[in-house]
Amino acid sequence: MDQDVDEFIKEVERLCAHSNRSAVANRNLYPIQEQISLRHLWRYSPEAMSGSGVWKLNEDLEPDEFVDAFLRMFADKSSHDRVRRAIASQDADPADFPSRIRGCLDVVKRAHGAWDEQRKIPHILTTQSGRAFSEFRIVDDCEELFGDPEFEKHASFAISESVYKAKLLNVLFPDLCIAYDNRSRRRLRQAFALPESGSYLDLLKLLNKWIRGRLGPHPSPSTLLRLRRADRPGEVAELKIAHANISLPPIGLTRDENWSCYTPAERPLSRVLDKQFYDLETDAVSSTQPPFVNQTQTFLPLSGKGTEIQRTDFAEYQEFRWGSAKFQVSNDQIQDILKFLEVQRPLGASITNPPAGGLGEFLVSSGICASEKFASAIAAALKYDDLIEVERGRTFMLRTIE
Image 1 (cartoon, helix red, strand yellow):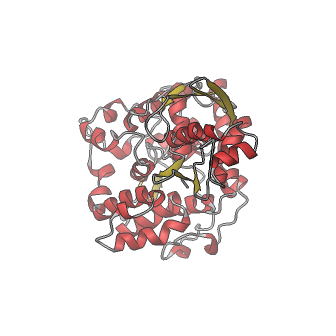
Image 2: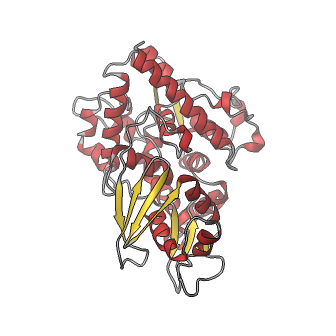
Image 3: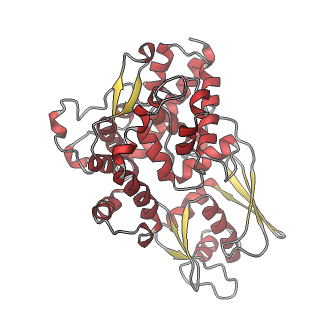
């Protein structure tokens, strides 16, 4: 194996381990939910593609099984019952739900209602040469697929739209389409210098070019198998798969003798690659990723008017310029702010009479900023990055998106 490829895969292994260790700390126990949904949603054909294998959607998956597997892997457990009840109620309107749930419900409800058609997409649709969509992997030459009008129709949504649209495509194409959350989407945008108007298809093209540049245009089966095996949640998670830890356990789960193991070792390429763009701590920034640029974004305060705010991303901090003011907020401080906003809080950016318990008060009391007014700039940046939801009323109310 080429030394550069060997070093690349070693770094992929390290970042997968870091991502899995972080996921264990989440109350959803995502390594367990991911494993159960992986075996529930998809099937692996190890002999395909000259022995490097391919993961495909389970064609026999029923609509309600799809819903449970999707929620288990991609949604906070606090929303599971509410989304399931809304789907069962034919007249439930996603617009009536909080934004944290609305995007998930809208995508899952539509897919559930048309599941017979949805599950056929990877297997029935073919390119002009007759190759099924499900035969393409992100490491392959995908030019023909990406130029196919039918695939374009499904993948051309803007990446600024609901993250659950990407997650649905990940369900349909586990070896091709990666999922992302709000934070990793921002990192992907930075890594590939994608504008907010960029499409998911644009992202796939850039990912495909990047991974083929790292592995070479014709990686050997042994190289791809090693890449698949780079994600080893059972080794680093130290988390036993017990029935009590599984959200929405599938009917007949224990009839599968391997249900409590992290198998197979060959993971879907989407699961391996999306963990390279996890919202990493500063010391875990990886050489596997495309080089980051010090991008500058420009946006308005939450009111939509006033002086423009400029924010430049650096490796360890963000630098803000707002009128004559210039200040910096470290990545650790951003995480502190998001933790503070896990409970809905007022913006509190008034200099003369800021409300108690607001973001402005928190910024000053914690030493992040010298004035409450800078809450306006920071909140606008967090909204731009899809990290918070904002309710507009007499005062802006902020809350971290889960």
